[in-house]
Amino acid sequence: MKITTTEVGDDAAGSARVFKSLSESLGVTGVALNYFERAPGEPIGYCYHRHHEQEEEFYVLSGTATFETEAETVTVDAGELIRFAPGEWQQGSNRGEERLVVLAIGAPFEQGPTDLRRDCPACGERTPADPEPMGDGVVFYCAVCNTETGRYD
Image 1 (cartoon, helix red, strand yellow):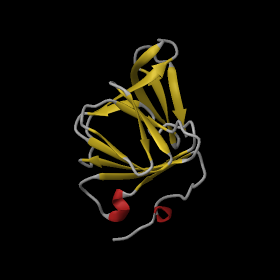
Image 2 (cartoon, helix red, strand yellow; image 1 turned 90 degrees about the vertical axis):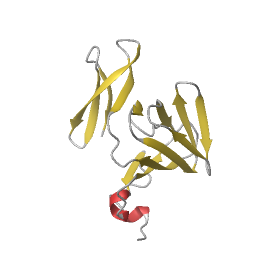
Image 3 (cartoon, rainbow, N blue to C red; image 1 turned 60 degrees about the vertical axis):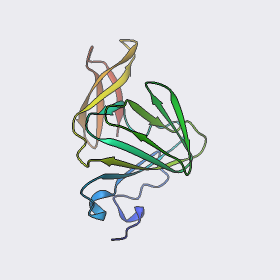
Image 4 (spheres, rainbow, N blue to C red; image 1 turned 90 degrees about the horizontal axis):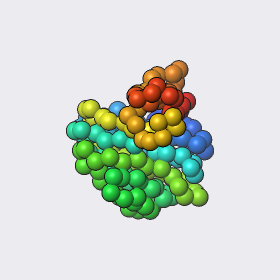
């Protein structure tokens, strides 16, 4: 089966945050295949996180991705890949000056338990985060003090 990213979901090219799940359109069942576009300053995902069972690979198609891990901050340029094993903490973002385009692969498809952390302004540190659906988006609250730590539409 052959598809293009413009055939999947809403074509929101040019917006700050584009996300497209490609697995279903391709009939893929063993891995999660996701397409991301991020404007400068935008995170790839919502939280610093780790998956207990799923590994993740990110292939940078254009731009530069920066991944924060427990051990270091890693820069991944266009044409490069990075892998995170189950249990490894990471958060990707676009700290560059051009648009970031990334293909993310997660295996197995079902990510299983995931730990989320966000910077809490009230606690002054990165704390566990509780997501709550909000319309088409999500709001994150600190699991320690219940302060809102992020809102994404």
